[in-house]
Length: 47
Image 1: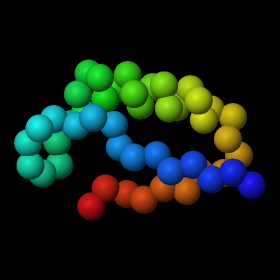
Image 2: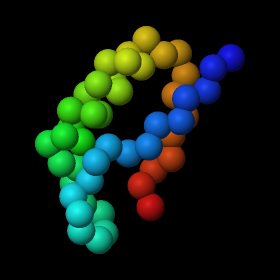
Image 3: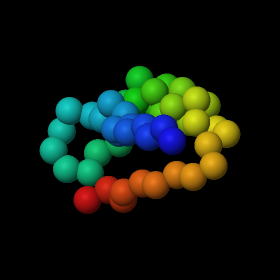
Image 4: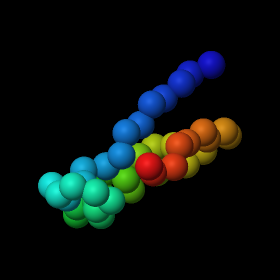
């Protein structure tokens, strides 16, 4: 069994619940492509 831990993408440099940057969007897309055939996914929601 393999376990991957993935942290959120690059976010704006402000405090609080802020959007991810353009680079963060690219990171998220690459991660989604990498894991597209995964059978199980566990995640935690934003705080």
